[in-house]
Length: 115
Image (cartoon, rainbow, N blue to C red; front, side, top):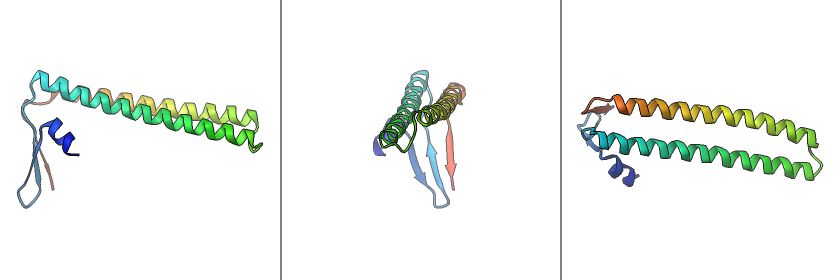
């Protein structure tokens, strides 16, 4: 958590009513740096989804070996799973593109308040 705070260069301030989060000025280099952070997080999300798919398929195959699922059931379940995986991969990519676009169009100095 601390490493992310240092990486993003934000400093939180508590004024008693809420937390004020000041972001450093966004130069083009800073925007590129933040874009890389967002891209890395998107890729981590995709990897997590692929791991879920791999584990699910292994479970299907195990159930098939135990004669609890037929080969056709495994194929059908795998196809349905792939549709869901594709949907979530598209969502991750869409969110990534939105965040990247926002980064490119943010004002040079931004302050966010929570509370």
